[in-house]
View 1: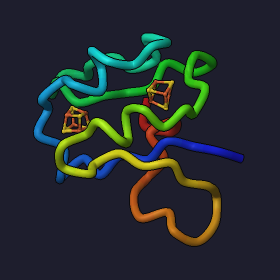
View 2 (view 1 turned 45 degrees about the vertical axis):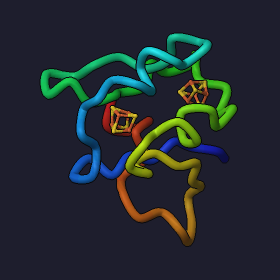
View 3 (view 1 turned 30 degrees about the horizontal axis):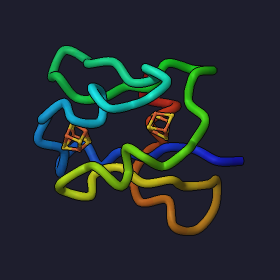
View 4 (view 1 turned 90 degrees about the vertical axis):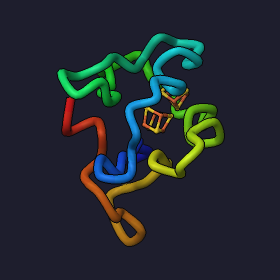
Length: 74
Ligand code: SF4
Ligand code: SF4
């Protein structure tokens, strides 16, 4: 199962991923950091490539998950 993970401590709240998602699957939380709108994300990976500080990445349920999946933070 694909998921989108966010390192919230690394995120600078620049808003780029939110602005550029072709599915409008990301919204701002109260700290202006991204949360995922369930059901809209296609896990295309564009936001993970655009993030200037590497705070977003595609992750699964197992090894390599370094931060809580953003799916579960929303
Ligand atoms: S992986 Fe693609 S669809 Fe999902 S939030 Fe990022 S840019 Fe949007
Ligand atoms: S592009 Fe990266 S730094 Fe900017 S809001 Fe998104 S996750 Fe945070």
